[in-house]
Image (cartoon, rainbow, N blue to C red):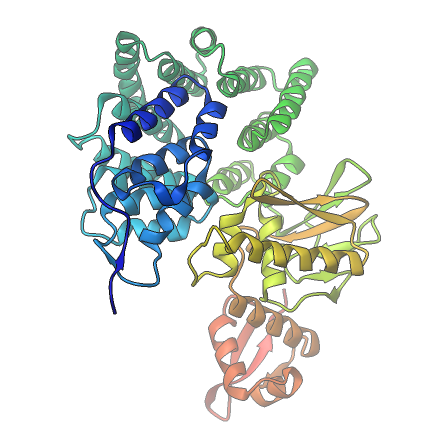
Length: 526
């Protein structure tokens, strides 16, 4: 097969280099809109290969991930061999753009698929991927390796140090974080990197809060506020930590509660989903609000985040429910904890795990509509990105910026139609490459603890549906593989495989019949 010829790899012309420099200056000056306009004027096919990585990175920095993916796709995902093949810098920036659209699994696979594991771009973008997954232990490892790279500029290292400090605080390595922040704050002040210095002060304030040093907290946040006065998103972070400090000191104060509610509303209006989530966490813990913490747990997909809530319950001897009925009235949500049946003030209860309305199955377990339903209900704070949805529905395929969004939207349209046909008052929002569920009337979402972390595979869901069927027809009594095969219309071999694989954890006991194991089973009493 002939190798595909790409655009020339000659050095960029002075005009191209100067354009990239102009766009970079606009970004550093906060003129993101102007930078986007300049990039949009470029014709993708006219950019020489030598300039592609630079332009793709500029696109990433201004939120034009799709444009960057389209620019690099002929190199990274060509159906024919290309010459020269994609280099490590091209792979790394393509992975960074995939992370931006939510295709983190594909990005990590690409970052590992090369011969330069310690290339600075590979290390940096790997840390970004694990940030998206809230796996901060791995973030720390990659950033520490990145900071040892000689070819990284002082400013890039300073940004990495800020992210490293934040990761260390998240993992509660406070002494190490504090030493790093003291050194970094001095460097930022010396170099006049005001925005980074403000970030350092805000992270330092988080440590002061953990240590109950309230005067220091206020002083650090005051200083950070002065430095980041024009950066609205950073101002929100500063406001968040001010409110959290007040909550910890005065958890029962109605004035502090009102201030928290006001800031939550502001975060939602700005699309600051993680600020909203973090406020709920600290509000729930400071006021020991079990319903709010359970809602947060079932509405959050991150393992580390959920572990904090589990530990909080365990220390207080509270019982954690296995399911949650998240009920919506006309506008405000009400919570029913520990619900195991489908009873609700609403006429419509949608069991997410089973894909059923009021006990009647609407979708086939494990198929795309069912997995999409689980995906959209896995995070009830933050809209789900299109790249993440695609990677979960089609895990063996690469994300294609031209065709993948339309394939996801086709499934969203089918799920919308299913809601309409079955009179389920839920609308699926789709905006700027993200999707979420929005109840439009009285409805209850029944969420299960074992399905909230991530959507299960099609085969796993189908197997669990089979087990539920068997439990229903053979309650607390023994049955043979042949009985089960007849009831489910599956082959004895398939039934035996399902029961042997899942019986220990899903409510079945293996029996011996005439000395032959795994021929008969009995469902356990719960």
